[in-house]
Image 1 (cartoon, rainbow, N blue to C red):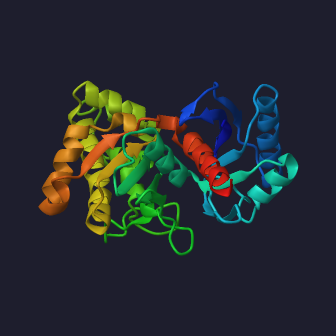
Image 2: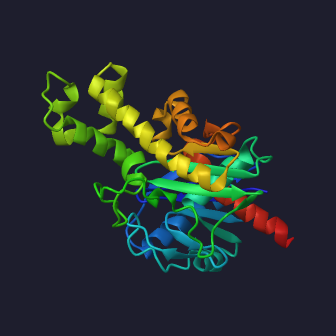
Length: 313
């Protein structure tokens, strides 16, 4: 049974037909328009395009923000999608298309996609960490997404990992995990380290405010000692959040995904986590990369609507 999987982010809208936990079409993308009405219109336009060539049984939508899953309404704001809070997206799309629709937080959808598409179905507790501009987390316990009492479980990017009030997070709080362990966190660390450094000490110093994560990674590969220090510190910051989650949830496995996952040095990260984690928890806990990459949200959202259809049959 093919379903359409849609991933709605702050910059782009991506969609593909999903069947048997895999993409069976190419991904179609659109820039994310501004405002709820235009976003809904873009979703409907994409859906109409796919329906010209495919018989779809449902639509799964992964979106940033907190989602009240039983109604499909976005109840928690996200700065990436201004005005999106309060949008009853499931009700609107179902009324327009007469198809079942499931709306899910994007990190949760990504977690469910990884769970269904890999060899992780035997794991009791799975934690999927999306490393991007920020940090998102999806938690699966005994085969089911854990969404919390107020649909907001997994907002682990806002775990506090320092008491120094040094870095202001986009949420308005200080020293959240994503202010350090995300792509934005790596960049901030790099800029802090090059302050006062001369170009002859590190080529990164020549970039100043134009510094990018790509420049840091390239400098790491070229043996730049300051870049290597920033890179190691970034891994230590990722480790700090993983340790908090490990000691709270005792998971079987962490899966890392998102745009920054490609830069993770897994041997280094596993060593850091092992050194800082209680042995009883660390000895059997896996840390691995994604099997779906950027398609995890689409696959997970589609699988969730297919699960709903099967349960209602």
